Length: 89
Image 1 (cartoon, helix red, strand yellow):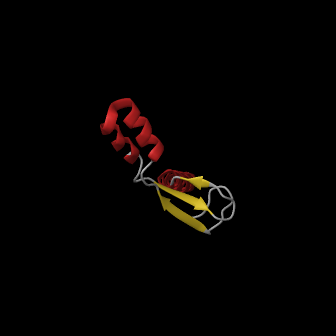
Image 2: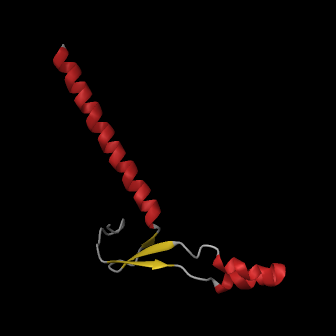
Image 3: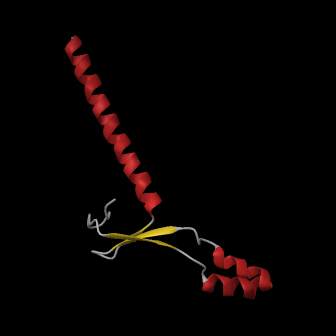
């Protein structure tokens, strides 16, 4: 995995934990039950580039990389198809 901004490979992954701010807002809005709001988003992982400081969601990057691989594969397939078609003439 590389940083999408600077292409650096010195990365750190961090899992988000309990959010005290969300818990306090939830508790103020709904009482004690709202404390559970602090766990919203607690299982998300963020990757941090130690070279440039950029932070991103690795699942978003993985989806973009997969789309790029599919695009390249499709272009190569189209090129082979066009070459075969030209050879038949």
